[in-house]
Length: 78
Image (cartoon, rainbow, N blue to C red; front, side, top):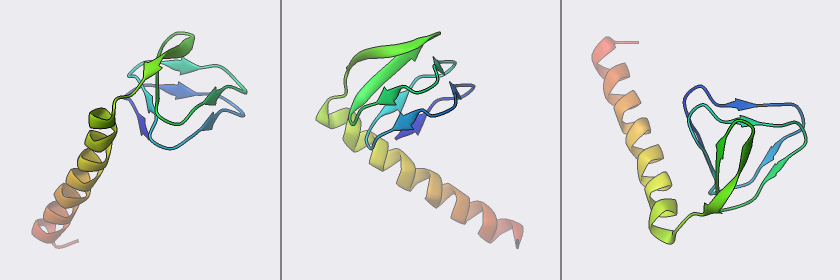
C-alpha cells in the first residue's frame, strides 16, 4: 500500500494490500481500506479501484525508494 504525505490513518483502520491513501486524506476510525482501492479526502472515502497498471507502479515505486536508500547509505558511510 501507499499512504500519501500528511495522510492521517486513525485508530482501528485496516489497510489491505495494493491500496492507496491520498496525500492529506484522513481515514476515520475503524474503516477498512480494501485491497486495490484508492481513498481520498477528509473524511477519506473510497473513490475507485486501482488499475493493474497503478498497482504495478506501487511495486516499482517501493523498489525505487529502496534503491535510493541504498545509494544514500553507501555514499554517506552510515
